[in-house]
Amino acid sequence: MSIAALLLFGILGFVVAALVGSGDDADEAVTASPAVDRVIPNPGDEVLQQQRVAVVLDARYRLSSLVVYQSEQLTGGVDVTAQVDRIEGLNRFEFVPGEGRLIEALSPDTNCAVATFVLIARPEEADTARWCFEVS
Image 1 (tube, helix red, strand yellow):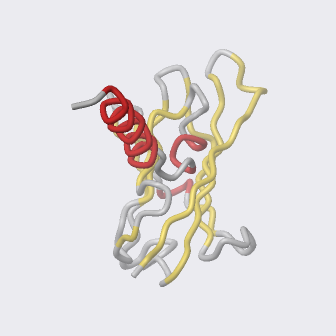
Image 2: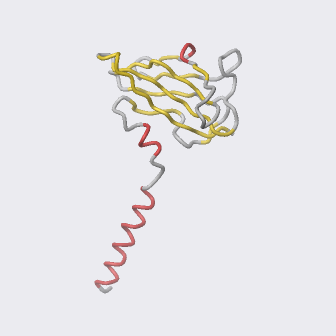
Image 3: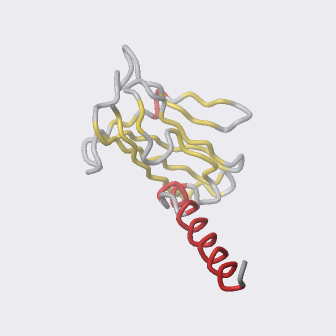
């Protein structure tokens, strides 16, 4: 095999790796904050109407509020903070829609969530994470 062919295969390999690795940057943007370890569902995921909406925070942070919007417009959101469960040890804050809850089922199409959180050592400094997902 010639050097030119090897060089061509090498370049092709880099191109393929770049294309495969260049997924949606939305997930990286949400978790770019040192406070956010993970959001559930992942940005852009397609989920069912009973899907839990959650944020996993670094142990140094606590959740102030979680608002679920039933569109991308971020208007008319439902503050579900009062019904958020905290999973100790994981520092996961989650809301599960259901009968008798503030939201019984997520609405079809795009839904978004905004989590506001504070550094426990400096509660006057709030930050937010916003992510959207599709509901089928």
